[in-house]
Image (cartoon, rainbow, N blue to C red):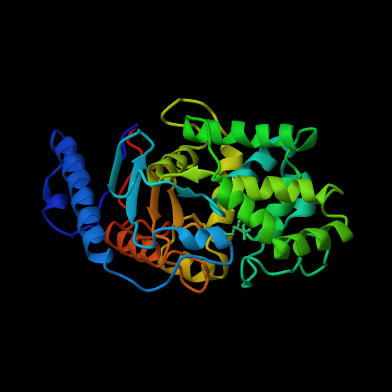
Length: 344
Ligand SMILES: NC(=O)CC[C@H](N)C(=O)O
């Protein structure tokens, strides 16, 4: 299979190179063009100084605000990154997408849907709210849904359940995940809003009566350290129908990857999800650690890191990068100029 990140038709000489033997050259030219564009975007956007790191988790306020990275990895394992791509930060809400996949894989769709819906809310990610009937969390990309999904992690006691989550991360990352213990403890000590959400769900019979343990696990999964490079590789796995291109391992089934992509597109950017789907059109998940993971089905993963956040909790520079790249390379799912094809 050969895929490449292309550009808009008529966007320059890249599209005039002809067919046949010239195809490889066209693909290579596009690849170089993509890389050059990403480099220039990184330069242009690095000066954006609006927004600030999240501080409602006290430890997160200590991150370096001007770190900035962009990374991309195709389903063939072609990797490219610019900036602080090896800098580690906490994955935070991006974990919600992965845990949702784990829950679907382990329990099946119906079991998960009984507890967590798939409707975007328009409320902030930490809203203390359930669905319109009051007996399900709205969707798995907001805290309520994510905590309900974490409740479904199997294992006897915290230790075993942490091990289940560790295994999942290892399959995506290709190495052992490591938590930021200071962030984990900081959230344990201050995450009372999440406690309120969890106890509300316990009162409605949505989650089991082991709330403190489940919250502890939820805080742990959010505190896992990743790099922008890691996120791009995770995206490539989901884009590749659940097969990790680096290891060849099937991390989630293709039907599960499909469901993950759907909720990422409709709910992944919190209460900005509608605007995001409209303008960017790439299934994505953001986290208050400053990361954004984007997944371009059948092509690869794209990721950004910059901890300066907007009022929705999304990275300001990250949103800008995705807007620009989606537009310049026709990456919107429904873009008529979407240029790549599976060629074999
Ligand atoms: N939006 C986020 O990244 C939120 C995750 C964070 N751990 C919380 O629950 O508040």
